[in-house]
Image 1 (cartoon, rainbow, N blue to C red):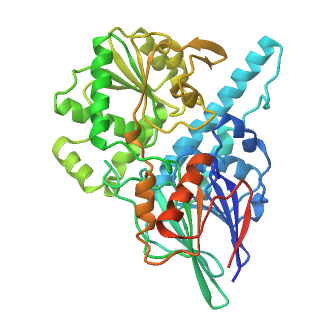
Image 2 (image 1 turned 135 degrees about the horizontal axis):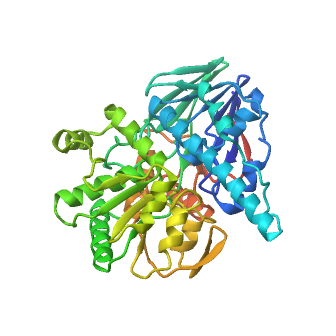
Image 3 (image 1 turned 180 degrees about the horizontal axis):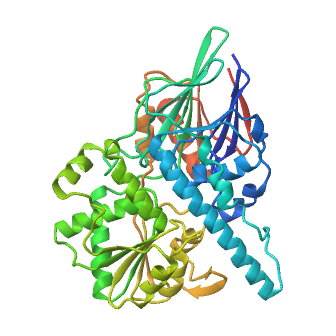
Amino acid sequence: MQVKLQFLGAVQNVTGSRHFLEANGTQVLIDCGLYQERHFAERNWDPFPIEPKKINAVLLTHAHLDHCGLLPKLVKEGFCGKIYCTPATAEIAKIILLDAAKIQEEDAEHKRKRHEKQGSKGPYPEVPLYTIEDAEACFPLFSHIEYREAQSLGDGVEATFYDAGHVLGSSIIRVKVRQNGQERIILFSGDIGRPNRTIVHDPTVFDYADYVLIESTYGDRVHEEVADVEKTMCEVINETIKAGGNIIVPSFALERSQEVLYYINELRLKKKIPEFKIFLDSPMASKITKVFENHPELFDKKMTEYVRRHKSPFELPNLQMAGTPDESMAINSIKGSIMIIAGSGMCTGGRVKHHLVNNISRANNTIMFVGYQAVGTLGRSIVDGIKEVRILGEKRRIEAKIVRIHGFSAHADRNELLDWLKEMEAAPRGIFVVHGETESARSFGNFVRKQTGWNISVPEYQDEIVLD
């Protein structure tokens, strides 16, 4: 029995997820994500370590940019196989890739003009990593696969997708390899959700696997209780409105923006906050919200009951969608306190940067972070307490109140990840801790080892392992 596994991304960091599996002559890439940390950004430009045209298939766990954002580059460089994912993931990935391509094109043009004005050049080419046309070239390759439906990938290799409970349509992928009368099961966790969260189902658990690749985004900490999320959010809204300020929410378009709207609606219905204007300034988030409404079969029981009683939690009376750039800019002239939910969640691009420019230097405003902030991102610099940041080429003094709400996370924490692993009835042959910053991954690996005695390892970038 011989299966080759290579770690090409999201190892001792949290973006750029890519894992390569080769068995029985079949080559499979699990995820093809974009690096979003500044100090890893050059990897986005590097040639793929595996020749794209030789890869038979891509298995996509979900549609977050750090898991799907390099697909246009992969296709551009020669990949022509199928991209397997759930129907909801396919719909959302197409929206996210088009948006990413648009941002790539706009950023390249902005850099070109800035460098021309400054008479200097930056570390990366003044051309987009990929274009809208490149993104569209991926779409014919998407192939839908339903949960628990086995898909043959080649001789003796099959994949089955299970609900990961992370975001709408997200998957844990089980790859089964048969070779010389033997069988091996490899689990790719993707991003594992939390039990008892709003909107989506709990993550699927498994009773057996030979090898497991498990994420560790929050592998070194335990989340706040959900009740604390609602309480903190209520306090932020009321205190900022009382101060006459605005609330800026850097938010991922997928799942997080919808969850923020869900909690605001809950607070409204309980009359814990006043009526105020809310702007969802993200065409991508607006489109993704429609995908949510198209897939009620993916809602958990609580969300299904919520929709039955209150209709959609995404239809707030004071909610406005800012579609065009003009509508986005017009928000700046609004009088009175408002909330602006805009991407990107780590402040690495998108419209939130413009809203930060207009709001981050005013003491009565609040910047409310509701998602993970990777090392090397603008969002991480802000939450780490830096006093001055560079946004859109200019330095800005941070005077606004900075609030971070951890309990919103769509990632399982240390204890929840361990509970997920311990559902297995026998020890796996090996567990590889991935998708976590170095400290988090190593801390979680040590934690699991002490709790179970299992064989744990924390791979490094481009490590190659033969599974027996």
